[in-house]
Image (cartoon, rainbow, N blue to C red; front, side):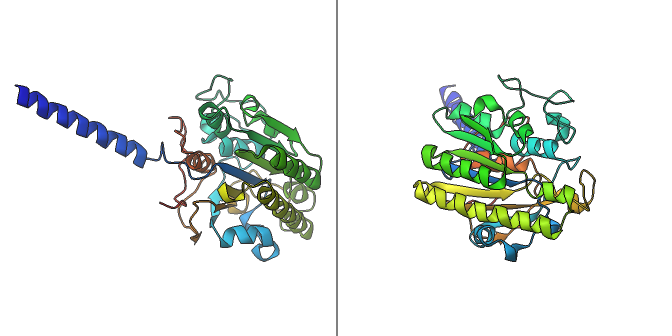
Length: 303
């Protein structure tokens, strides 16, 4: 009997190890990849209108990291819906934000945290590391409603591209944030007023690229560059003067990642959805993702 109990005990331990190993393999927990993530979001930046040769700072991140031009938005391909998916790790059906300007979910969120909002990458990091500095700035007030503002240490709006960039540089210099999202309202504004792919649209992207160069330099000046990961992405694309439909011009956006422990693989072909951004960010910090999340981290990190 003693021998049988011993064998059963050993088997139980082996099963536990296997289960734990499978959980790790599934990507729910992992070793941290870096201590800082800077998410650089361009509202309305379509893959169809992305002119790499005109964007030296973004191109440098692409040349030294991994990227795809085929990340798809959730539906509808509109702003609040997709910023929510990007931050919350789920699609429209689960987070419940259904219109371009949703500040609260029209459909009840499937799960909410202690703040009464679907868990976001900001709140998950804050809960695990309350000592971390977490921030977000944007040109669009609705963003504040989608990040879980109670989970961030700093949120502010900037009125122009340069004003937002100045806020970012100041914040990086003073606080050295661990997670920081910068959300420009360009080139969406130019897309709606002049048209997606117009010269004004492309000029707006070039302007933001210049600001991204300044943000990267700010991380160097603050001494966090070597322990930092940069992500460039967007909520949706556009066609003519609008978006929200089901064309690839409206749904496909770039995702570019570069920095500490990111493999320099160039373009990758793995399928990616908007909600995979949140999963990839939490993977950087080695965080366990909520069961409700359907996002999965991209296979872009060094082993």
